[in-house]
Length: 68
Image (cartoon, rainbow, N blue to C red; front, side):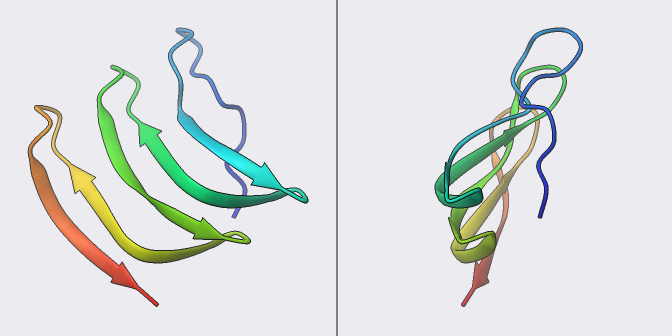
C-alpha cells in the first residue's frame, strides 16, 4: 500500500503515521482535504491489522472494521 505525499495541495495533512524499513507500521490516521479525520487504525508492515475506524466529517463514528 503506497500512501503517496503526506500533504494535500492546501497544506493540510493527508495522513500521519510511521514507517519502519520503508513499510507502514503502527498507528495511522488518514484525513480528508478539509482536515477532518476519515480513518484510523494500525498497520503491520503495510498490512491493516486490528480494528479500523471510519468517521463522518462531523467526527462521529461511521463503522468499525476488524482486520486479522
